[in-house]
Length: 160
Length: 375
Image 1 (cartoon, each protein chain N blue to C red):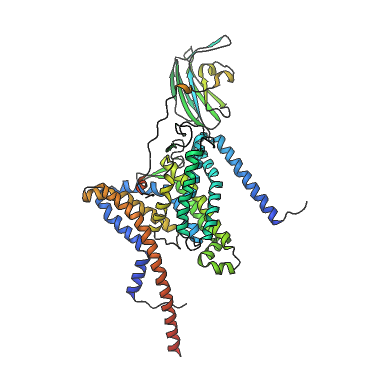
Image 2 (image 1 turned 45 degrees about the vertical axis):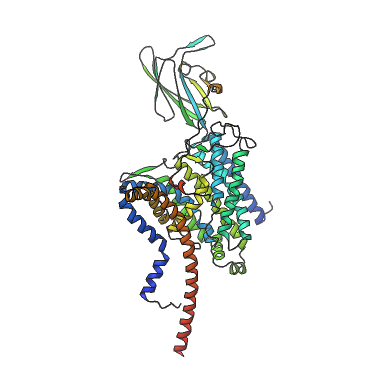
């Protein structure tokens, strides 16, 4: 193999560095992407089977604090990244306490997903208990302008 | 090497003159602190917060000083690039440390291009780098406002309704960086004597200091110092003077972009059209307060400056209120001092340059007298 000249080698290193930075950027995009996971404790009917809502259930996403949901409750967890662990604590009809841990991935490009806890515990396939969710934009309240927050250096006039 | 014979008084005044600005600020703080009535705990916490928030930006100024290009007022270019990176990651919904890293990656090519352009222009305005970079800052600010106010949402795709103005294009006056807020500071924060210390941010700043120390010893760093001392001698020694000067501005601009991202992650809100304008002025003022000059600055000056300058900023409104009954006076005072210190530092630099020339003349005269006496 022919030896590369120093200038060619330098260009090769520069190219490699650019590719590496781009890959790092893509990686950061995926691991830093924010998602909202809606945790739903409502009865779900699917293909003739009914997944009954829990009278009370506790749930946590990753290492966030536990959320307690009564029947027909819905709560949300804001998370970073694609892959998450969902922990569910519930009591069955025989008053036995159970803990269920499930790993799942949020589909790429999806901002919000809805997790049906009764379907998850009831053993339904992932496509049933994990569904994309699109907020109803028509009823979304208008975003109010944030107050300007600066540190006290903001008093320095910069234009005259 | 011959030493100029000086009286003790002359030596004392020379040291006093060399450290006039830090001594002045120490005196202001020493008088202001008791009148402000703030507890030492409160002041300590504020100073720690501001060191972690501002030091990175101020360190970004050291490289062009090394290359003899004075105080880089053009660091606002890097700050704008950092802000553009932050706007994009907010639109894409990227938060935490990955969001910060991605904003830095996005800001790098913009900073590098703006720094290169700034360096090219400054090479055409040798000897007037500071005022030129100051005006370049205003010029690029106009372009930034054009892009952010009219381009984003219209030409550059921005989807988030939290960012876009109600008319459908342009970025809102403020951008909420809640997903980024204190993401670096809170990774590792410890309590020392009741004060919260953001260790991870301080580690990042320490790494930058190590980089600056290492950089000074590299071939490029030595070239910059040579160019800073005498451009013609450096050119005669085979150093590419113009290229070296451009590289110094590019490095400074890129670091300023990163510093701006660090600064804004601490504050948690981006003031889209004003944040960058304040940055250059107070970073330069803080560095000068630390005893730096137009042609000499070190890491020690950064930390002394940021401490004294911000201590004055914290103390003066309350001291003004307690002394005269009007906090507004303290506000005016600190604004006056911010501009005043830059003026004093520039005047002292010129005075010192003339005195140094005079000292060289006196040294030469002394040498000639000594030679005559020996004969």
